[in-house]
Length: 286
Image (cartoon, rainbow, N blue to C red; front, side):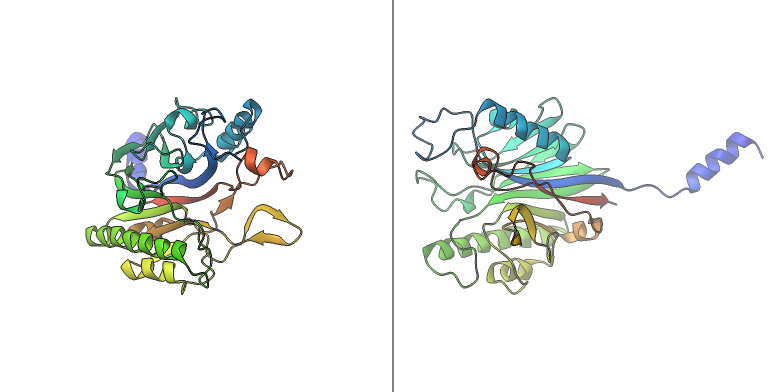
């Protein structure tokens, strides 16, 4: 048999390699280029120095995410200080708040911008309003992956907590459950990433239960403690999470969860970098 023909037959018989992407989320804690005197900023906010942006940019390069869900970022100009716009396209919620959700996506990936999940902002006219969800669809090797970046209400981290903050969080949870139900009806692969401001010690947590009732979910960081800014007592429970649904649950690469911790350990650096560390997983899409 002709050697060229044999090589072509062997190539045709070889299994196709599924595309793999790195999916990450990072709350960068009031990342803005506004001066500290800006009235829209909290009075006690520690301003970042030029070197802090350089440190964050170094960590972003090390993270090397294909798709990065962002929280607490003041739009594309601020994002471009730590993520190279030659490599990434930016997508942010269409609002004027400083603490916005968004995405940075590698330019080699095709993105469809969906309407913001506006309903998550239950107090749109407040000085520090709640955050909309940023909703995009990314095409990976011909497969579509629907993604939602969220930053939910603070002040209700535990199931035992009560009060107005918890009422607000449960309202947001109901809105998220509706978004999940829509994806389930479509049969779409999807993920919700971001700062839920909620610990999920068990699947029976009321917030997580409500979301799982809308569609079965895989929490990529389930059963793992968060080493971000850990001390002698060890890691802490996560409040940022990556939830996978639909076919995306089967795309999760086993043992691919990573948390990028900062080399800087001084307490002051928690405000100059972020009190959150980026977390990531890999998806083998196919």
